[in-house]
Length: 394
Ligand code: NAD
Ligand code: MG
Image (cartoon, rainbow, N blue to C red; front, side, top):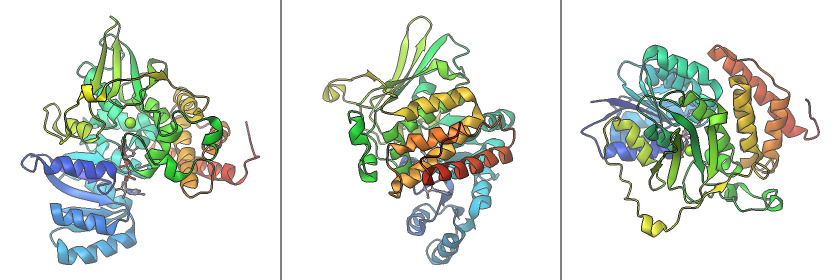
């Protein structure tokens, strides 16, 4: 029975993962659960699952969790910090690792899982954007399986010939669909005044706050273009973005003969999660059947990178290489956090990223330390652009 570590268990993807696992207690065992600092939520999950390990990234929260679990789940050992996360991602007692930490914080444990040859269920797209080369090389060297959880990439994975990327099997292009987010039809003037609450109100998906803002700026799709290049070993020229407001067609693959294969389903992350957990088999996910008559129509329109410059910036970074992708990701994380804190206007998010990209031109990082160094410098640069909107270099 595969033993599963869920990194980011208290988040949106983490909770959906446990929902799927709860339907298959006879097939999978939960061996470790992790969170940043949500002691109460992780306590409840430990009481329900009795994992061998629980990890809090925050050491003070870890102490609090250990004190509570001594009474309520004494069979669970509590670990702390990045070292604890990397341990439960790579230990011999685990087989599958759901990488569902948000942002750069997920890189070290996700890479540890890939190096240790685990089946990595990759939701944490930022890890791949930051260090696509390191992560895919590590998986190849160790024999780790990288299975995409992002709904678009999971759809592409299902539509590609088994084990084949666009360089093989007669694939012409990959088409990633995008809902267009909550501001798909908003005017440029309206965008300047939107609030974090409006940005987080996604029409089709309930997600964590960071990815919700990414969806609203369309940086989510920019990150996903880069993610697709690494996962499917292709260039950004073969990856297109198509806006599809209903989020029913999750993505498509076009072949040389003109055939287009698409994966459809209700927008619910439990489908890609169940797919990757059971692959190559299929198991129930709890997702209801798709009722196309009730959906009625499927609309498609081109993406607008004038109102949503983050999409253009994603393509730009993808073409520049993984150092630039790392800068893009870091600047985006800094800008999104500032927006969520009410310190930055929505329309300034792409400005901060573009300025940061313009004055950082790193080479291809060859090591984890090099990636972390680029990330740290880009964050410092982005913070300066936050403070001083007038300063532009490059
Ligand atoms: P979320 O904010 O709901 O949850 C994030 C999880 O990561 C939480 O468990 C949190 O405790 C943990 N975490 C946060 N900061 C941490 C840190 N510094 N150290 C350790 N753990 C930390 O996020 P989410 O929406 O579940 O997204 C998780 C990842 O999956 C993101 O990379 C996102 O892009 C990707 N993803 C999410 C969805 C979705 O539907 N939510 C869809 C596709 C991809
Ligand atoms: Mg997605």
